[in-house]
Length: 61
Image 1 (cartoon, helix red, strand yellow):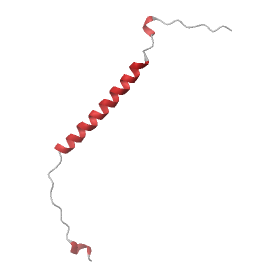
Image 2 (tube, one colour):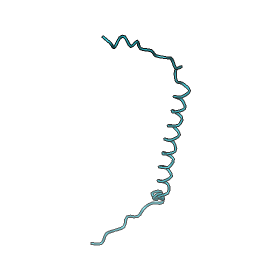
Image 3 (cartoon, rainbow, N blue to C red):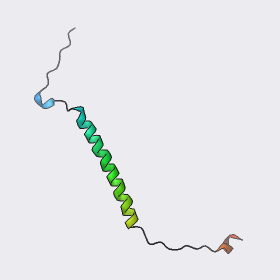
Image 4 (cartoon, rainbow, N blue to C red):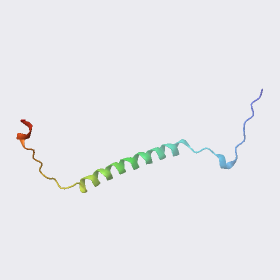
């Protein structure tokens, strides 16, 4: 009938909800930083541009 409340030890305290929001925020910041890093890497490691030409006569057949 009566529901007993379970006693928690001092080590089983719940973390405040702000910790979860902070971890999510850090994850988002890390994702954006990695995205920017890889965009810059693709710009610096891009191969040299070369002109590509296709003869038009090949399509007239």
